[in-house]
Amino acid sequence: MKKRIILFVLFALLSLGLDQATKIWARSSLRGHQPVRVIDSYLQFEYHENPGMAFGIGRTLPGRRFILVGVGLLVLVIVWRIVRQVDRRQKLADAAFGLVAGGAIGNIIDRLWLGKVIDFIVMHWKHKHSWPAYNIADAALVVGVGMLLIAIAGEPNKQARQANEKKSQGDKKSQGRSGGKKSKR
Image (cartoon, rainbow, N blue to C red):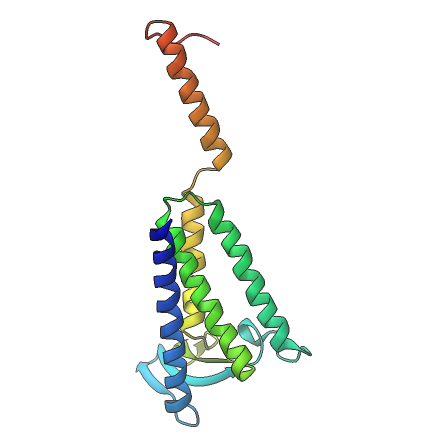
């Protein structure tokens, strides 16, 4: 259990630390300045403030700061419950939940402290088609959820696994009684 917690905490702190450090950098270096082109025609850093959810949804919602913090906390609880369903040997799920937790907490900190989330990564195709601005917390959330889906898809249902274990134990017992041959049921 200790290794699971260490892995979770490591990924949560890594994603949270990178998120908050890059947002501090974005506020001090990008706010009020021209975008910084990282990969011409594809990627740039540009300061944005998002008072809503993904894609700016809910930006005019009354009390949105507290509603969105509550939604973030609720998502953390739901994801934690899902992770608890995954086999204890599943390290991928622990790392994934760390990324989700770090990303969610990073955006919750912004909402509580600033009332909005700082976004600064902008991907586009030759300046014609742009993806909405995002940040490291958003990236950690997306990668973490993807990793969780992989972990869950690779994890057999607990009830099915337990049924198979019982059947396997029953087959071993019947082999012992019949001299190594399986008995017909």
